[in-house]
Length: 94
Image 1 (spheres, rainbow, N blue to C red):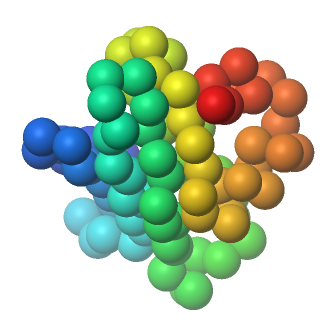
Image 2 (cartoon, rainbow, N blue to C red; image 1 turned 30 degrees about the vertical axis):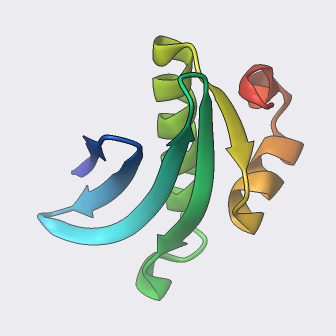
C-alpha cells in the first residue's frame, strides 16, 4: 500500500512517500509569503526508479497547493520536468 504523509512547520514542509511502512520517497518545499510554494527537492529510492512515484509526490503537492490557494515554483529539476510534461497541473505554476 502506498501512502503519502505531509508534514509542515512554519514555512517549510515535506511529503514523504511510504510503501509497506518504509519511507521510499521525499519532496521538500518552503513557503514564500502566503501564496507561493517552492519545491526544493524530490527523491525516490533507486529501488523504485521508473515507477512514477516521484510524479505522485508532485501531484500531491499540486493538490495541496490548490486546496491552500498557493502557486508553485518548482526549483527542483525533476518537478520542473513533470510540470512541463503535464498541462493539467500548470494552473498552479507561478
